[in-house]
Length: 390
Ligand SMILES: Cc1ncc(COP(=O)(O)O)c(C=O)c1O
Image (tube, rainbow, N blue to C red; front, side, top):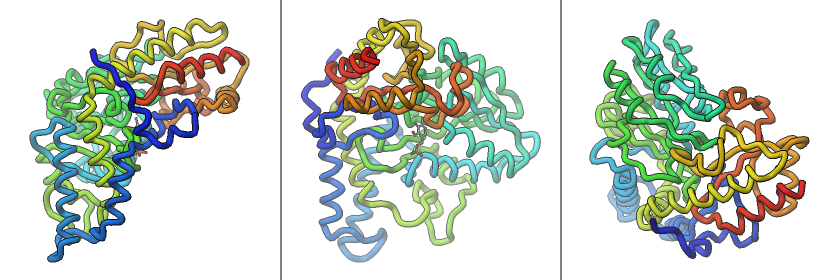
């Protein structure tokens, strides 16, 4: 399969010479996304939508263009595209609306593999409505969320299933089509937190079978923003919290106030880059760097990679992992790596339910390293060398 070559010059933020493994918390931004945002701000088109003058019409055109790009990116023939400040904000808006349709006796299934932005919004909606949240548990040893662990909790009372597309700490990807099929069989709807999945594999909401898919463009080389796809009936019919003049239908119904047009310009450019580059090439690049990183870490005495049997345990995994170094707290390891100009995160990274099953301290968590489209073998080797020096 094709691989990525020579794309690092497209990321001005890499000029500092750091090995950046902090992509799961936010990637470096692509040159064309930076330019699109700056060009927009300079253009004089900064206005507001639905006006009678050209700058306003340019705002409408930008929103239409970015919506079309995101539809293509999601493989979505229909449905609405919602732009918001973040996925957490988008999922809060969704769960708040869904909460108005729930009552005592209704159930929402969440998972322990998820980032908290796809758990707490549902817990809050359940608290407000009298509904119940049931937690499907992943297996800490393999890092896998078995389909059965979710399906066993789905029953006639299930209204929604909230599941991650990929763990933001250990990368594992649940079998979404199988989960969606079981949910739909009882009339429940499925919301996928696609934030960690989207930068690494192609998205096809039809093939996944979900009803809502949420992602954040700052994880895929664009600006800080959230983008959410919703099935037609949900986008138009769920009782969204909205002000009266806001549109009655479509994605804009869910947007709180004026869109960030500069962010739309950047989202459009970043999504175009992924489409033009090809997600197959990005996936292959990630998998190969992941294998190298895993082989190196598994070969180091005193290093433990969480929920990983070895370098070949990469199927259905985004190229993201967590590890511990014996005798050193995760924060200490991250600080040591920073002295070697290697950027990693430590802690729970908001995957708050996942730490204990992985055998980790709930707060200290582990060291997280994530591979991005610009990660090189030299980056991987620098990380390995710095860990070995501990
Ligand atoms: C898997 C996952 N879901 C949700 C989020 C939250 O995204 P946002 O910061 O856009 O709210 C993150 C952020 O790290 C994430 O990794």
